[in-house]
Image (tube, rainbow, N blue to C red; front, side, top):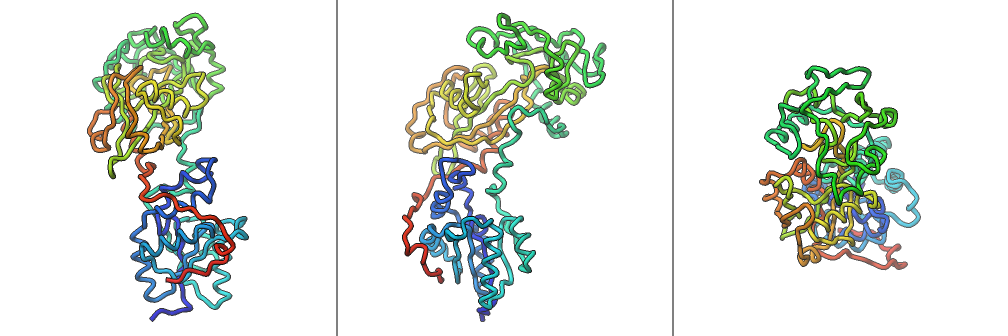
Amino acid sequence: MKHATKIVCVDLDGTVCNDGYRHYLTPQLDKTHTWTDYHLACANDPPLRGTIVALEALAKQYGIYIVSGREEIAREATVAWLKKYKIPCDELHLRKPKDARLRKHDYKIKYLESLRTQGLEPVLFLEDWPMIANHIEAVGVPVLCVESRFPKLYDLPALQGVPAGSTQYPPLSQSHISDIAKRLAGVHLPGYPPAYQRLFLHVPGVQVSNGSVTVPDGPWHITDHPNRHGVHRKLLDVEVLGPHTTQAQPGDSAAWRKKGLATDQLGRPLHPHWRQLLGDPRIGLPTGIGLFYRYGPNPMVDSIVYRWNGKTPEFLLIHQKNSGKWGLPGGFIDSTDASAEAAARRELYEESGLDISASNSEIVWHGLPLRSRDTLHAWAEVTVVLFHSSPNALHAALLSAGDDADKVRWVSQSAAAGLDLFDTHAAYLALALPRLRPPLTAPPVRFEPTKETYEATPYRA
């Protein structure tokens, strides 16, 4: 027999439903949207079956009171969703306009207090946000915290990666070192010395003192490379290389040290992980600029574009002329690019012929990927941009390989996993997978607010 005075309170977004697929509708990620857009799109949320099974069992003994931070304007869509998935619910409490300024935990605690004044006893609260759970437990209500398998909205800012231009990289773990060594094994790049001719700390003439290293002459140095000729001259860092030459010149030690980087005896910056890379007998590094355009970090971008074939995601991949491997469209960020996202759109068009200027984008990762082309003095600093485009537009788009690509095609997730992708591109795809937006099963439900909307009676199952 259900005790009417004893109730279980339940949060909705992230606890009973997976709201992760509409995070992109929040102003937190896209300033062109509002929280109302996010709340009204709830009709497409997948249910979290484990929570529903728990509620069905609890409903046999307790009243089920759902309290959500959703705006009251989303009541009709929410009620329809609850009925669709047969969610036990004795009362549905949504945020009214008068509660708009309340913080999320204050809003829910205020609701708990109102229940107690009615003679009801909350015996349990189901919640997915640990911070709110702590506040609820502080007022005497035990909390069962739900941990879901999709990114939490409150975690999203932390997922943006290392800030652009940062030199504060953590030390490499042994697994990172092993991965680099595996990727470098058997790699033969034009102009690069083979592994046994790279620079190592044990090489005679290498001296380390006060964060600087003396680099002796040897077969490990790359004096010049055709990658920096012709059309790419606009990318040259004139402060380092000079305005009329592609020959590397000594840099300014003080300037690089101010950026947190060690230097060698010629004032050239050293890779942030130079001690670990030069000290590992499987890796080592060439010296000089190599295939890059600048000393130090070279800003680059890689683009992830996907579409859906039924329930299977397909990614746009190019076959690179230089490496002979499949990978993501991308390249160097030009001084004329307004942002990393703008550079990603440009590179994508140049290499695949795909114009996604109207697509939404988000930064999946920014950091130091440690690529096979890195040298002691020049390395890639990559921003990975994920594009969310209209499925219809992508299925109708014509592809045309160009620039650094000789082939371009859509590749399924399973097929991509079986390819020997260029450098760390497989890792980029793995980072993007949890953030793909599945095709909507129904259009977002929208309602115009009326007086009746705000005065609606609580939903009763």
